Length: 460
Image (cartoon, rainbow, N blue to C red; front, side):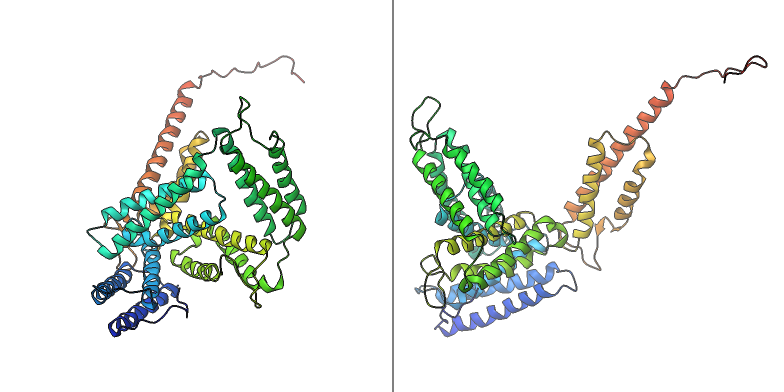
């Protein structure tokens, strides 16, 4: 987050704040890197309180004085970004500090959507719902957390919401019949960019995507999209421009075949590595992700993104990257920010100390629901493995709490509720199996055995 271009503070008291904030940030980084033990709530809250204390000192120094952004602001931003991810890690997702990292990521995504001018209603719908939830969290936390932080978050949420209104206004101008076409074109252009960045380039895959664009193009009449009654559809020119960009991009991708010039190869390799690593994490986030790990990805992405000059990257000779390189790198950055956003959303309000238990219960619940959807079990004994596992997890509680050493980690309510749901599902399946067994017994006819004759011919 820190760059040499950001000036040091001139005010001596601000320099003292910078020194203390730098120490806090270093402690947060050390805590993040320690994988030998679980992160404890008390360690995070202690560093959070120290950060808030320095915010108060900084505000006191700057009271009544105009100031420009300097190194203090950057280090403070790093502290809050780390603390936000720590709050997610310890399961306090529904408190204001946890919202900081999400608002940062949403703002970054919205900036890129505005820049690219390629987005669909689905992109905006997800972020709108998230911002509404964060707005509620910030409002409820206003009396429990630093006024500086809650005011900052409230302003960020408002800024993001106003940006979404602007973006949605463009989509609202499209005729209803064109909205589906527009969304399809956005999906195709992203699929083209994905095919362009695969380790093994597939021309046939790009050709198929290009053919889909051609099919859409053939539906136009004299270059215009028409409504069912034959009039020009509202937004025809905008969607036609998106279609043109799809065709141009498919031509460029087919021509270049994923080859990046040597001058920009290092940046490309870094971004490919980040994208692939985040993709792996997105498959099994509950089992392999510690939310604080996202900080390193964000830091690398921010640095590469912010190294652009007038929206583009320069090579060693100061020449801007050609269109193909620029679009390829921007796609990888945006895709990676998107992964980070969804990984944050997938974060459970449970401390990482309880995640092994929580994840096992999640798996058990899915298995029991699957058994139920398939018609249940024929015999009660088929449920024994589930019952034994549930009982073993339940027996881990001490006075109704799941303990880790002497600590009571966050998320007790979520784990206990999930455990109760599993027991309830298991009970329903057992009752159904018992009733089925009773019906089978009562419906079986009682027959009298027939004695074989003592003499006579024997059937062959």
